[in-house]
Image (cartoon, rainbow, N blue to C red; front, side):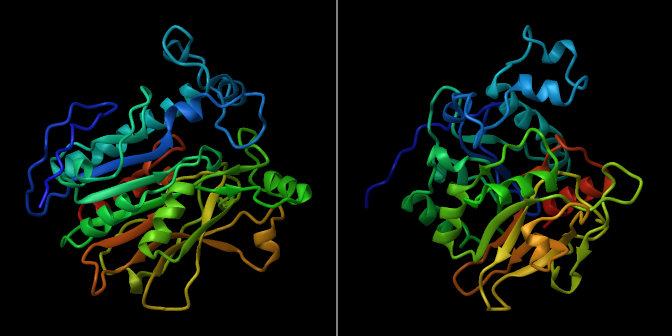
Length: 340
């Protein structure tokens, strides 16, 4: 039998030292599914299906980023600058997880700034217990999980104690009806999100390959407490299914203006469980509301089965960042995940 020798993986913000297995101390790895160059090089005259430039972010959120560390002397001003905000916003999560587990949390990218491609394989999986796949690739960049990656993750999930966290992002403006796109835009109210912003080819292909019966749909604005700007109405928790107590002490995640509904596409009640739903802001119409819904699926769990010893969780990547705020409830959720 031949043995494949892999070169060392490239990291963005850390020097990798292989992490030794310690019982009860989970080793987390984060994987951004995007092609950094393809996203950063998108034509900024295109209105749809791209990230904002840092200049657009500064204009909309003025004066929040009007400090020297975000100036042209210190920070990238194009789309690349916005991508770097995501990397910066995950640092607090990395710190919290390391404080609980004792292990650093590497931050991988599918294709990094230097154009170096890193598939999900043993270079990542060998010293990982919890793999987090952040599906922030725009569909137009054509990222897709390869058969060998799907097989590698299947083998990973056969290890006892493993966990895969899938985070497909929103799918805004999928309809060809321009009036519906405008309605969706008015509902979430974020001027930085174009009328069409479709994410997640990579995670969708991965979910299909793994048999995860979920589709990421829409971009829904969560309900906030009357009289507040971003204080969330508490989650609707289904704790009978929360066998790992992941939501103990957790009342809310963090406010984000356009979150995906994780639609369950199976009738099998034992295959996947919705652990938490988020009430929707009903002040502006939306096709999902008009269909009779007033909350969306926010946090889901696929328990192990006869072929898979590991758990699969689904939760949007924004709840693992501080880009959109955070509080004690959110950090409690992070710690619960670390102690799975």
